[in-house]
Image (cartoon, rainbow, N blue to C red; front, side, top):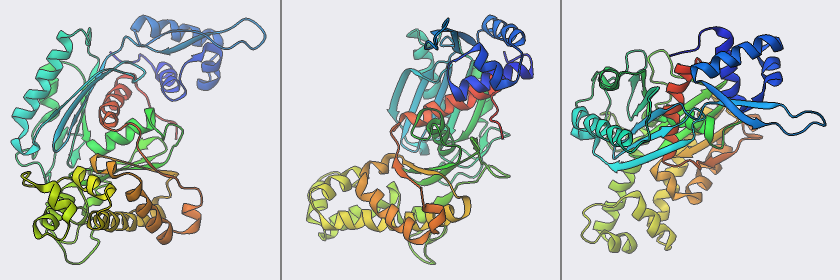
Length: 394
């Protein structure tokens, strides 16, 4: 089920970006007469795309009725990460109806992980969260051929190369399905429901097991010719250095990411150079960014040094992007973003020092407030835009 004509698609686009509106406002937004907008809204309500939403604030006369995207619509967002699987259900306004999260290992391969995602969707349906299903959006932590709906040579996803993820879910659920890189979808989530709601051009930087960047220009995801735009984790910051998951040396991701922090913090703990990290290591085997955060906040200088060094390297790469793309905002998310303001302070310092004054004259660098919800909301947003025919104005 999709809009029947371009007028309806423009109405739904306006409701997506501008929220609930009166018929007169919509008529002005999409350049339709009042009689025509009334006809189209009536038909969209019959199709289940929109619903009435109470009355507008009084302007001194009769209060107008508002229209909004239907809360009866149901979209699923599946966010597959390197170590976690998140599944969320949203309504037409992208408000979460249900959300589940569980630990996974992406290296287990596509079949067991996609089976777990399918089982989770079945449970959400059994619990009454999916009286109907209008579409599914899926994010994966690797390069994606958006047109084909599969990953292409993903460095941290053995066994996933060209696996037909989209076809798998289309056959399983019999509904529209789209697949994209997880960072792109987190950027979409921020655009619709996060700090970047009113920003047309921004960068979303995810620091997790790896590092990636979602690029939003004119309220659209910039994917590039083959879908690999924003893969900043593999920008070289040194000619030499640790070997990256891609097989090269000197990549940003090999110097600073969740995996890199784990490696370096564990080495400092085992060598005894960091008593704080050594104490936290105990019988764990390896440390994570979470333990680095604990040690840093307890005053451990080596842990703080890891965060500062990583922040400076990330800031150096982002400075190049800012000079090139000129975003209005940078949002930082992902598990390692939990290191918080000590990390952000280093990123900002290096970024502002290395970027042109005009590009950074009014450039906020902020932590995501959506957290783990960004991916599932963005995935639902992606597929809902496809179903509703939403297309940002250029």
